[in-house]
Image 1 (cartoon, rainbow, N blue to C red):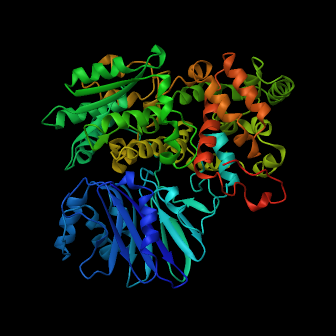
Image 2: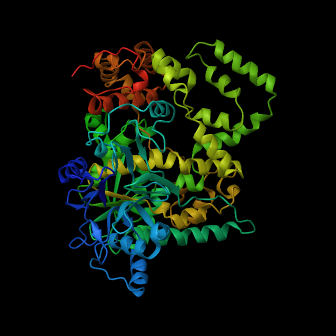
Image 3: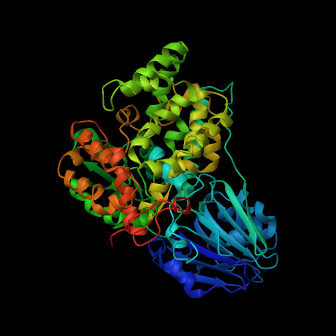
Length: 636
């Protein structure tokens, strides 16, 4: 596990080692054990290493036999031993025992299609000196991050946004599209960052470039939901058990101590149960809980830990945990509206005392239809039969009702149909809320961006059964943008590697063949996954109500943290940025104080403001498109 960085200079000038070192120093937490650099004529690559496999000889960058191909790599290749045997049989000579070296020889053998043979989580950059070609690739599901930008005659890339911010040509200007997307979807877009001109490489994509041409990005993998009819539930459950065991076994390969995050839900419990069967010693498990009973899942985690004899560790979070907020912007890298980043940060800190690698259960809700919103959509689809004139009247009535009035959102939502209705339910502020949240001139810039357009396009592309389309959408958006981003950033903040065996791509591709009616029947979600785990997990785990990894921020904001919220969001520094209408923020705080849960809205604002304070103060805040708008200087 590592952090990677690099520059390709199109001006013909050599890359500075000092510059590469500054880029890598910005992500020391991703690799505290070692660093390494390659400097060619116009290309430089660097890395920070967290030693997991081949502790002694696995230093990067790794090269081929004649030093013409070099690679820096972040992640794990789980089938590297099989690939190595095939490549050695084809005549390739290896000089290390690390999985990284497989990539350079695969590239020699297959060119850029080498990425299609990799089974794992990864982001890597490879320089071919003979062909003068740079290849950058990201894993299929987006488990590992990769940012890139072209500016000042150079192409730069890195595992984190702040790596690129070390370069003078990357100006710290807000990306208007990303700001708009953040306040709709809790995160920045799939292919853009919060900084204008800095992109994310999409999951399942690769980038190629040379010193004399523009970068080209293409997709090398996608998942297709194609139900395999004619099979009974027993077939799918048995195959699923087998693939899960195979994946967990591969994900347990490590030369350093290993454990698991355990929430007590079916996903993490299934991973822990499988680990326990495969491990010769007790599995170390780590859980987070809360003092508020309706948010606390520790009793379930304890039951699983007891059932499988794990070496269990847990921590109960209180409002004083918010003291970590000053650290979060640095590690999250971008504003992030999912407050469960806080408990993920804390459980990672807890685990880092004992292990260097953890397995998590992320991905199960997307693969096996576990989200409550799928149940909601199943129910709401019946409302499409309501005549259009009645829906129009509902929308008109909603617009006439004051904000905060009971029933207003229900009527507004009732007026929508199909994908528009589904996407509306996940829009944090909505178009009406954004109009109130942002200053008028700022809103004019943001209004041209439709945060739902990509999602609508993915739903259309997915086609088929409505449930499969929603699963596809979540696999392509919510999973990489939210869940995997959170787990990667918060685990790496404490220099531990998080692995996700449910997202082994053969398992993902198999899950996409399960008929949707086997996932969701009546009010039962994850039906086929639960059937696969029958006799392995106890019934109280298999059939317990879903809670999710939520945090009681709304209550904390009404209590001991109320002053913190006001002091941050209504402070002169926040007002002087000229982005938000302070009166509307005050309104949000008041609504939350009166019992309306505005925690997501307030947390997204808090995350954005904390990020601005860390990365933008003393820098240009708004893009040139707003150069005609007067802005007061930000206080230091």
